Length: 536
Image (tube, rainbow, N blue to C red):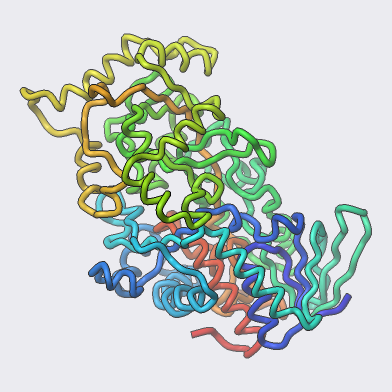
């Protein structure tokens, strides 16, 4: 086959790149390893949160946000090296262009956002998002992906598009610093295929889709659990990263930086080995170690610093920890990231979504009680302790000690309570000052509050998710050789490029930067291919 451009990978970044190129009059071959039904990659299953700067929705909520404020937050939270040229350039591009090149662009494509702006990753000491920026796609990321796919096929309806499903690229062809196409294999038949093209775009996702590669990249100065779940795409294995590095001298940078989550549990109906679901941990739950003791001295509370939570969980004696809560907390706060378990948003059922927000999501809690072995429910703490021990085949949880932990927490709510307020309660109260968080966060109360039962314990593991590092690229999404010069005809977008520059987020993300990062880098690549210049 021949084409003007080959896009390797059919995730969001690859689809947007191909779409923009088709609209610019180029012929495109998209090669994707998954089935046609799963075109869209991880974005098809994601929740759909986007960190955006200076939007009309922020203005309506009287949120004052500017690229300058956002960049300050980004750099302080991500701890970017000021001398790291291309990640810094992409960080600046993100905060300056997320409004016109992501928000406005997806709205022109028919994508809409929910009418609330959430406040995530505030930083333990106020060093994260200083204002709410997290916009949620109405219909989840599945809606975004479906619209992009429909637009892709419409733009390529004249025969300029070929999408090859269940094909795996095994080599990028080229010599003397110039690509000439790719070699692929049809995984359903075993047939070989050569696609000739002067431009190749690597859009294969991250490098941590398998735990062997994840552990190779794990930073040696940070603890690594001996058991983790996989929340990444299993085909995002880094093979193309290494092909680019080995054959063309491309650079893989910041491979040790990754965006994992601290509270995952096994998918009841896994799509692949080790498949996990990432909970959005309940702020009001007590986070316990494997013995049922509260992790401290600073309690673990979500919504402030996910990177720190992961490190605290990773350093525990066992690879699992526990969330201890009650039914009252669960129906208001318990949630699972992704489109699959957010069906009211995914299917645009606004009235049902509103009902469950106001009166409790009993449906999801009962579903997990029925489906997940990690989700334990009992009327008494002693009964819950027995179930926790049965699940781990141990006697780690002493019922009397578990009771003492809960009693100590509940004592803070007694009329004669003295001493400093618990840090977890302070953080809950801080979160509840913002309206959308107040709707999803319980007013602090004793766990043993009358009528709040039964008790719930959820066993959670660290779950891998996204690579923050990747192929080093310039602001045109061109892959850079070790000389820092672009490799002719070779581009990289999305997670494969560390969301820009090989690591635009630094050590931690403001959350919701990944879908916009895919769109920004994809549109930059297409603009460069079409016009030979930076998208501004």
